[in-house]
Picture 1 (cartoon, each protein chain N blue to C red):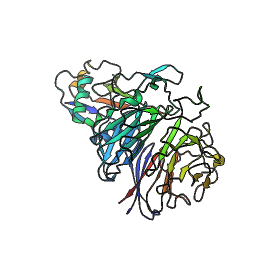
Picture 2 (cartoon, one colour):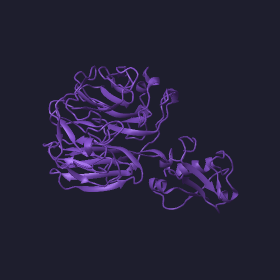
Picture 3 (cartoon, chains in turn cyan, brown):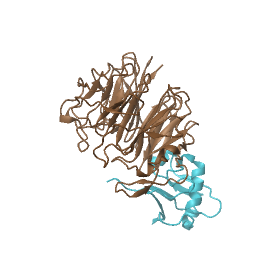
Picture 4 (cartoon, each protein chain N blue to C red):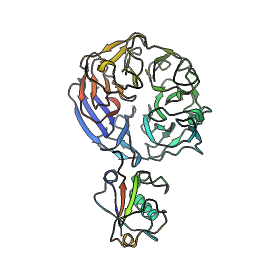
Length: 98
Length: 371
């Protein structure tokens, strides 16, 4: 199971309590994880990335295993620890606004 | 009429304020969508329990919320606002071409007779329509595609379509206003549009009486007399008696004719309200006195309304969508401020009292008169 953590404003929007666990078929990439997340919670479409697997929103970041994955390609494999479910994939609201 | 429901959108959520017909004791619920900007909340004239809200944030973009129980509970609707075809460009602040990019929904205008149909005015300026209760949105591209579109420029707040007026007496007729392009009219349900800015004078643009390019802040109309329109422009309060074909200035004796909102009394089509603001550089009331001005003559002759409003040290603003009127027998008038107050007058503006004083900055105020 892939573990995903969302920022609080998106957890509230999607009525998620705590961490999300997702089954991802095939390669574990940012695209496949986000596809699975949006399939489970359609209200998140357009709030993390553009509709139809569009680009990451400017003030959303993707972290995992103490790495910033925000600028990696969406089809790059995620770290093995994320694929194995031992580390979460973090969707983070960027610190912005002073 | 059993009472009123005031819908306030703020920088950090939405609030629903309810009262009975006396409008002196209020129940406040919220914040709904806490932490998000709520540009506008409006109820359906055909079903007062059906509400639509525009919720957005710099982090996560646009969400449309819908309530079917008068704001007690909400559910997200559709949030995909895709411009029709290849969007093209408009002018950026420096005059260079800039791609049309969806930013947010400024204004939601529910249909007069169908709760599932609602119009959305968006930034960058465009007009969308949903016929399924907000689940899906389709652009009406003729407005953005007007031949003048590539010359439109944003105002300081962005290039927003902020006003949508529906004319119940003339099927297919509607009005829209864009900052800073101007006012437009359609007579065929939005399939085609024409600018209606003749008579406007704007010294801030190269050609002061150009067909488009005017920073219109707000339009208002009384439903019983839809051919008469009132406008608060960046500077100047204007009036049209021919559905926008021509305009004349009615600023009269106002202390300043800069401002944002304008509205019309529910039962007196010639009674109108504005909130004069010092200038485009000083977005607060003149002399620190918060005064609503009322004209009972459709403009030109104005009186200050001050009873119950702060008359010293008041430096708030009242934004374009933050004034509304109810249709109780004695018309109520409401407005919200960037200081977080929502003021109500149950007597057509003669006296005022705050419903709430310490909300986040108020972006919009609408009111429903409940059956």
